Image 1 (cartoon, helix red, strand yellow):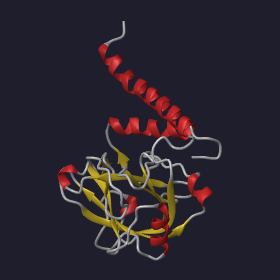
Image 2 (cartoon, helix red, strand yellow; image 1 turned 90 degrees about the vertical axis):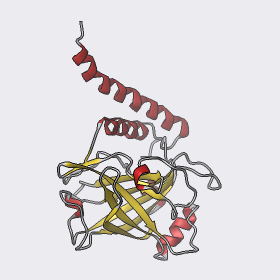
Image 3 (tube, rainbow, N blue to C red; image 1 turned 180 degrees about the vertical axis):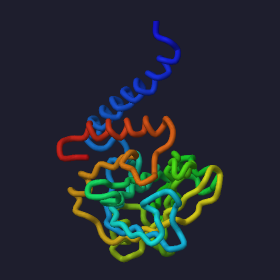
Image 4 (cartoon, helix red, strand yellow; image 1 turned 120 degrees about the vertical axis):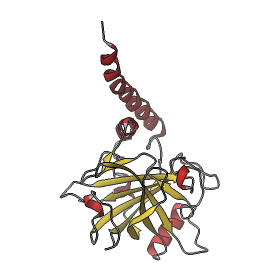
Amino acid sequence: MTSPARVRSLLPTSVETVTTEVFRRAAQLRRARAFHPRGVVLEGTLRVPDDGGLEGAELFQPGRETPVLVRISRGAGLPTNLPDILGVAVRAVDAYGPGAAQDLLFASVAPVPILNRLLLPARDHGRATYSSVLSYEVGGRRVLLGALPRVPAGVDLVSGDEVVRAARAGDLSFDLVAAVTFGPWRPIAHVDLSGPVPAGEGERLRFGPWHTGGGLRPAGLLNRFRDAAYKGSWDGRTPGGS
C-alpha cells in the first residue's frame, strides 16, 4: 500500500507530466507557442547603476552591463484591438558564461503593489506594468521581479510594428524592479533597446523560467508546473520553431 507521504511526493511529478502534455498538444494545435504565440525580439543592454542592483543576484551587481534579447508579445495572440495578457521576456545572454543565459519572464499585472501578482489584460505594451507573478529566492529571501516600460508621451505600442519603430528610435526601454511581499517596486536595473533581430532568429529562442542561476532561483511548486508548461509548448512547436 502506498503511504500518504509517498502519494504527496508523487503528486507534483504527475501534475508536471500532465501539464507538459497539455501544453504540448496546445502548441501542436496552434502550430506555435501555446501562449504568447507571436512576438517581436529586440536587442539591447541591461545596465545596473552603481546605486542599484539586487543583493545576492550575480546578474544585478552594481556597475554590471549585459547584452540582452527582449521578446515582447501578446499572451493569447488576440487581435491588437482587444486587450490581452501582454508579455516581456528578457534573456541576459551568456550571463554566467558561454551559453549560460538568464531568462526573466514578465506578464502584465495590476499596477498596485499589493496586486502585482494579479494578471491584467492591456492593449498598449508601453502603458502596462509587468511582473514575474511568481517569486524568486534571492539571498535567503523571496523577491518578486518586475519591468516598467519607459515610453515618451504620445508613442503608442499596440502593434509589433509600433514596438519595433519605437525601439529603433530609442523610444522604448524598461526599468527592472524588485519588491518583497506586498512591498513597493524598487529600481534595480535598466534595459535599453535598439532594433529587432531577424524574425527567424527571434522565433527560434526558447525562453524558460529555469534558465536561471547566479543566486536567482524560481521559488515554490507553481514554478515547477510553469517549467513543465514551457517544455510542453517547446516540444509541440512545428519544426524550426522554439
